[in-house]
Every structure is written in structure tokens, then in C-alpha cells.
Length: 419
Image (cartoon, rainbow, N blue to C red; front, side, top):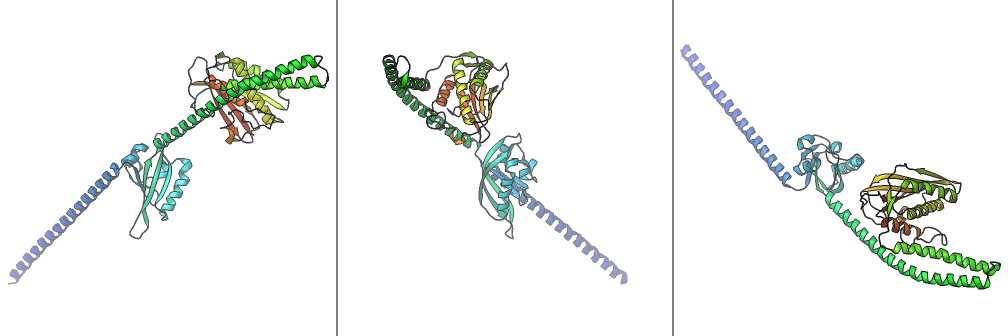
């Protein structure tokens, strides 16, 4: 009976062991299946979310509260050149934010973490190749179960092309306004100049007749008065010639002019009319390219700018004439057209820096002058504008207040096309 009892106990234990193993196996299989299902569900959810994020046309970047990237959609990949795996776990400002904007972006991020959301912001993102894209952001945050910010979600629109189109539109509008203004001023100036010519001719004729009849010997107060009338009339005639030059719209005849020769001749002329308290300096190479211009008018233009520089300096200072070959870039400050092609930049720079930068838009208009009444006609720079643009050239003015003012003439290289 003892043996039978032991045998029965052994069988029971075996059955219990089998049941235990079976139960454990079932539990393991259940947990495994549940984990597989959970992982599958998570994978499907991730694929679903990624698909949604990737089909959105906007840039989407999700960061944890430390600023590390945790999601990066396909539009973000497109405008940065990075793949999502390149940046996951990396700080957004270490890779995508230009150095000069990092502090501002970190400030916005700190305010979002502190609960100040939603938030709108515009900044640049760097492409992998070094170029930049301008992005308009709408930022918000996702909270955890305790109500703390867990993730920052940045949704952006690439406005680079839109901003460029807006700038081009504004540029075209300025060009149109400038063209209309200069056309109207040219017509007015031309009409006034022709009337002035008739008046001046009458003044000169009568002054000469009076001189011949009453002051032939050139002595006495009457002769002095008549001579002053004649000199003033000749100055007015010169001013009228400048006005007519500005108002003319035809192309002026040009030829290849040796830039170095013009500057050398100008330096000789300036040494006679610039006081010794003003140093005259130059910077150019003898082989600087020829320009397509008229030599006499180029002399006139540079002399006009040099005299303006002398007047701006007043006492002691430095006047520099320079020339260098360059390629057109930027926009003309006078006609607001882009400068293209092969050019020679001829510059007249004074050390006064007294020109108000806000006046650059006006200084080439006829009759506008910053000089005192009686010391300027306001036609000198208008004449410069008319002559230089007649050659197909352009102008720029660079002002460092209190230090220098540079007038740059961008003249076409002889034999090469510009626009």
C-alpha cells in the first residue's frame, strides 16, 4: 500500500508539473503574442503618423524639451538636404540654425518650454550645402500627464520664393516710380531750360550792347556792374546746358576711353584746385580696362564729384580716386536697375562722411542740393546721372557716417555688353 501511495503521488506530481509547464508556456505565448500585437500596433501607428506628416506640404520638426529632434518629416528633409536619421537625437540649433540666429531661436524655444504657446516666428534654416531657406513657423507644444511640456512641435512654411517675389515686385515698383519721376523731371527741366536760354540770350545781348555804348573802356562802376551781369548770365547758361544734358533721352556717342589716362589727367587738374590741406590719393592699375564712354564728359563727371568731395571735407581730409575691374552685382541707387556684366568701378571717396544715408535716394534729382543757398544748383549729380546712364552705366553711393562718402561709377568695359 505504501508503494501504491508513492506511485500515486508521483503521478500527481507529474500531472501537476505538466500542467504547470503548460500554463507557463501558455502565459509566455500569450505575453509574446500581446507584445507582438502591441509592437505591430505601435509600428502601424508610427507608419500612420509618419505618412500623415510626410503628406503635409509644410515643414514639421518635433523636438523634446531639450531641443533634440525626435520627428523630421519629408518636407523638412527636402529643404535641408538631411535625412531624418541624420538628425534624430541631435540639437536643432547645432545643424539647422545660422549662427547669428541661434540666440533668438533658443529664446523662442525657452518661452515654449515655459508654456508660452502657440507662437509664430520667422527665421532661416541652413541647407546641408550651406544655402539658407526662410521659414515662417507656427509653434506649439505637447504636454505629458502632469501638464508639463514634453515636446515642441514646429510647423513651418517655406517662404523663400514668396519673399523673393515680393522683393522683386517692390523693386519693379521702385524702378517704375523712378522712371516716371525722372521722365517728368526731364520734361520739366527741358522746357524750363529752353525758356531760360531765350531769357539769358536777351540778358547777354543787352549787357553787351550796354557795355559797347556806355562802358567800352571798362572803367567805372557801370562797367563793373555790366561785367557782373555778363558773368552771371554765362554761369546761368552753363547751368542751362547741364539741364539740357539731363533732359536729353538720346544715347550719347561713346568710344573706348583709357581709364588710367583719365584718372591721371584728373589728378593733375585736382592738384591745382584742391587746397593743400586736403590730401589727394589714388588707387588704380595702369592696365585697368578701357571704358565705353566720352572722355570729355568723363572728365566732367569725375571733376564734379571731386569738387563735391572737396566741399564736403571743408577743412583738412583726404580725397581718393580709384578704379578697379569688377562684375556687375547689386542694384543702381539712381535708376534701381540691376547691374550686370563686365564693368569698371571708378570711385571718388571723401573722408568727411557728411552725407545723410537717407538722402541717397534724392541726391540725383534735378535741383536737389545739400549745400547752402547760393552755393549749389542741384544739377551736378543730376548731370552725372544723365551722362553715366547714357553710356549704359550705373551708380552707387556708399556712406559711412562721419568717416567717408564714396561715389561709385560702374562703367561698361569697352567692347563688352552690360545691362
